[in-house]
Image 1 (cartoon, rainbow, N blue to C red):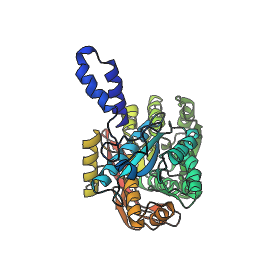
Image 2 (tube, rainbow, N blue to C red):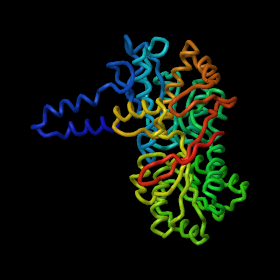
Image 3 (cartoon, one colour):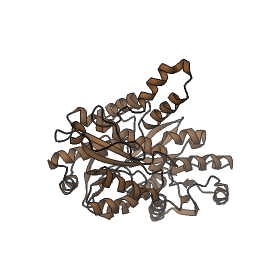
Image 4 (cartoon, helix red, strand yellow):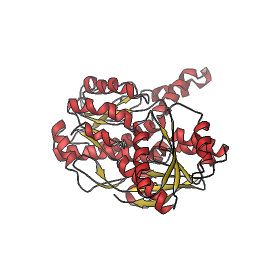
Amino acid sequence: MIQARTRACLLSRRAPPSLAVAAILLAAACTAPEVGEPGAPAAGPGGGGSHGGSGAAEESIPIGEFSSMTGATAAFGTSCHDGITLAADEVNAAGGVLGRPVRIFLEDDQSKHEEVPAVITRLIDRHKVVALLGEIASSRSLAAAPLAQRARIPMISPSSTNPRVTEAGEFIFRMCYLDDFQGSAMARFARRTLGLSKGAVLRDIRSDYSMGLADFFSQEFRNLGGTVLADEKYSEGESDFRAQLTKIKSLAPEFIFVPGYYADAAKIARQARDLGITVPLLGGDGWESSKLFEIGGEAIEGCFYSNHYFQDDPRREIRDFVGSFASRFGYTPDSVAALSYDAMKLLADAMGRAGTTDGDAVRKALAATRGWRGVTGEMSLDANRNPVKPIVVLEVRGGRMILRETMNP
């Protein structure tokens, strides 16, 4: 895991003489293999590692990953990379793809969509990758998709839900449901399951994900006879939401829909409770992170959000995945990790079905996916390369997540 390895490297440099042996062992971790064939250094953030060389490394299949390993959504990047790492290692342990090991080249986009073009260019031009995995955030996938399409390299986004992502072209795929389905599902949950008729929206105007999800939710909620009392806005990076929340409080809504990412949602929840707002907050899959609990604490109790899978699902696929992941990385995998794991597994499966790593052949194999079963459920890709799959709604109760409802397309 990149963060753990970085801490080990720093500690080795600071170790006093009495810890010389430990320092040597820690320093060795700085060059330990991460993903790919044994002994081959994997690329870390910033493009470390190499696709060249001789022997097994020369025959490996280079796959590019672009993730937010640092910055505002670093938790997404860590989960994504760990999910891909586990899947790649399992693929290699089972003999690889077409008799060759896969190797992941990782680039850090720093949680900034403006960094994506340079990151994708490095992966394609320097590392000669034959496929791309990423990104989690829709804005960053939207920045990458045209470049992958132009290069005719298949790209699979694990969890970018904005409908426009796959509209970039026939080489762009995703593992997750879309925001139109997610937004309408949460509107139905609020109106029919919870029986609420008056709500407010607080959206991030700098996020394609947040803006799109807010629009889909509001439209469906109104179609169901509900009323949106207020539609307040903020920008990513802000930390004080009291002005918007004070206005919302004065209108006495029965809930607040917050279609943002986990850090903002948690801060909004805390400030809402501080202002005496007791109604539940609802959100989308952008809430999914252990950081939601760390930052939000008791403020998120009684809140709801949509997600891609439930980690306590009794299905064998999920039990095996959660057990292997937790044993390897030391934490329970969230939906980002699960979707990223599925993305790597589906890519390997498509290459096997194609019988080659040629971009056009792999694209056709991916597009032909029907009834494929992964950790996040059984899925088929439609004509627009989007999966048809169910959504789950989770509730925070007693400091943990419980499954409240499963909704089919």
